[in-house]
Image (cartoon, rainbow, N blue to C red):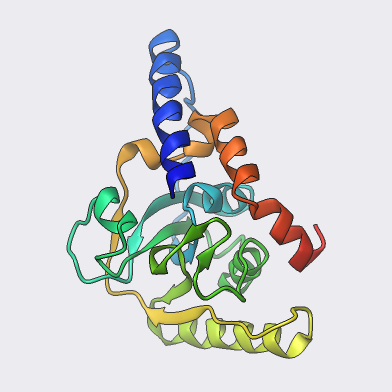
Length: 208
């Protein structure tokens, strides 16, 4: 937690300077949205680290960092990170189901978390950093449960999968400075990611 706050403070300062230097930094061409879209919501510890893997998936339109699974409406980062609201840091993925399926997104999710850890993720501890799949509708619920069962029965992991599968009641976008943090503060993001031990643990679990 202290590690994240340190990188956040420094990263925000550098991000502000870069925006002043180049007002068009980060601008990307806007494509016409597909006729039909769907969304998926996952919790995998630090939301900074969960945006990038999904943004790389063809068919994913956008990712938004935010909060899900708690009892407080419109919580702030300070509230959620203190662990008192019941929320988990989460991301919401908007995607084109004609190009990528929910089942494929579930596979991306598993490969970017430690589903054996019930106390947080990597160096971030507490239920606010738990892993979770927040489903919308019976189809997503069935797909998530089937995916979890396949993983448990595969023998790939040396322990029990503790990731929670729960209905999505509400998703609250996080503050703007958290959105696309890995793009806005590239060096600070990778320093945090390495320092937190995420990549080292993912390699132990998944061999990459």
